[in-house]
Image (cartoon, rainbow, N blue to C red; front, side):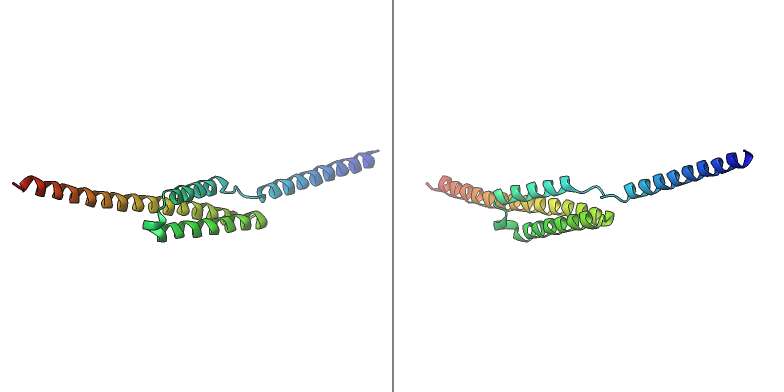
Length: 138
């Protein structure tokens, strides 16, 4: 009877050990799941580029707009890699590229607004000069 109890204790211990090991593997597998994807940053980058295109910034800041598009494309590719490979570094790189894309699109918009403002200012200065000349005429 004592031997039977010892055998039952060993079997109980084995069950606990096997169950604990299985839970540890499940927890580790859960940690290795898909990293958080930068879908929000990519959506914001798309929106920033769309706003820049609507503002026709390509006439004034095409290099910045092109850089924004290229970085958005790279961010999408990195996000796909992060999903396929469950690669956290690729997800972080995708987020970083998306943020850079947003910055480039906003820079393009700001440069275009600045150049348009300079053009308007130049036109106004020309109008003011013309009015001064008219006032000086007898």
